[in-house]
Image 1 (cartoon, rainbow, N blue to C red):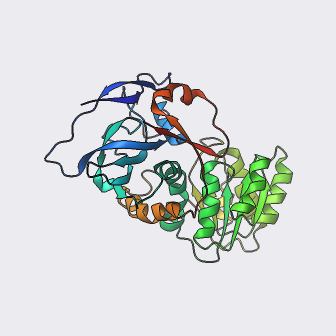
Image 2: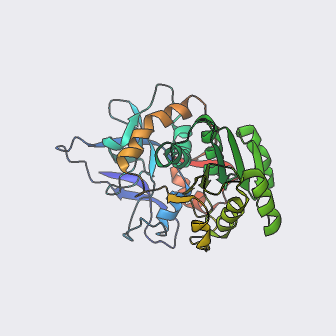
Length: 323
């Protein structure tokens, strides 16, 4: 069937609103279902996929981007779905979903809010429930807490029972807003490496878990600052690497791993099975739907996707594409 979609024909150009042929789902495959798209979040992961720079990119063009969304089935039921790698992406008027990667939404759920919040919330939700299950009263450090996903991580850590949450970031205005979201302390990441290290040592030396959206040099410096300040270096510090906003690589002295009980692991596609992610969807949908997680949204028309793609993001606001 012919639809309209955000079509990427070159990794050097934003998606264009164009007609696109969507293959009909195989009637014999009950797990594939056509849905009318209601809302799709324009997440950083979507942008990296459309540019071919994400580690999962296969380089094939043309493509329709998107990693998740909200759609309406033929019976009228609204569903949240995670896009399947072997299907056309969801930034379109219609798409085909794998029903095994979807969950029905409760009556009255806001499609824009669900589409905006699920992706940035999912990383911390899965990290603190599946990778390193957070124990009640444990303390959490969020590196990069002023980004959308980091702000979610602060809220999620508190919702999951963290006794203390420390948020870090460079944007001072957004850093100042974190206590209102549940942060017990904040640390500004500044150009003064020594001052930043001292502030981290003072605020986060005894944390149990780190949720890291930065990587690169800021993560390396934070890691050393925290480890060196711990009263008991044999006490476990679980470091969960999720994003790489500050750089894709890290330089870390080997002594950091030998002189402390540092347990480093990642959270993302490949580190957690699809089945595990899907199992977390209902509880996260419920959390977002009942207002437990704050997020600001901006809905934009699918027809304007090329213009919207090149506009700077408003800090703290998640753009959502609606047909």
